[in-house]
Amino acid sequence: VAGDLTLLEGEGITHIVNCATGVPNYFPKKFKYLHLEVLDLPWTDIIQSFGEAHEFMKDCVDSGGKVFVHCNAGISRAASFVISYLMVHHAMSLQQAIEVVKSARPKVRPNMGFMQQLKHFEESLSSYHL
Image (cartoon, rainbow, N blue to C red; front, top):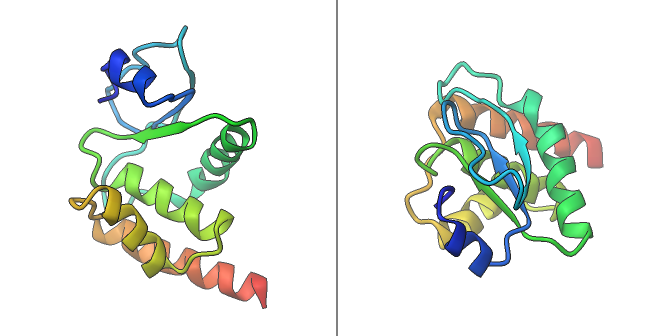
């Protein structure tokens, strides 16, 4: 999908978060990109990139744009970024955010390390909002 200009334009995409490794920003003159090379490994610290990704995504939404988040397979990394965004900006629990993302993309399955980090992230959000 990340390389399908017709589809991206047809969906009204204005911003793209590319969290893949080895995948270029295909259309830098057409879309605003945030490129975060994140390895899909359980020990990768994905949380360290949440702030930058969330700010980019929120700026897009606040300006009336549409953001597309992708990685290599669309199963683990991109899903983790979208799940964490929903937890922060839509006050969803981890389980609620996973269900929303899976309703749009059923094959979503963050790796076990990312799931553990998302659980810790949820706990930190819960203690922050108390």
